[in-house]
Length: 102
Image (cartoon, rainbow, N blue to C red):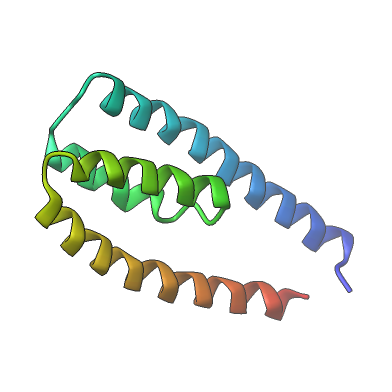
């Protein structure tokens, strides 16, 4: 059973994810709409988006990754492989922490 404190914490976490998503959404849209090919910027953005544990965050990550693939397919495949492992590992650990709080 979730108590009021846990429910409040969960809502705060979800709000943080939404705020982070909104920030990175603007960055991704800027990169894509202006055809920016700064690979360091794209990689840094992907590194941050991977920690938005929501469907919208994952969709944003994929959107930027597909854009990146339009001019550097090889780097994209390697990058997605590395980040897939990281995302799955962190997500499982995060879920376990949340389950312990119940």
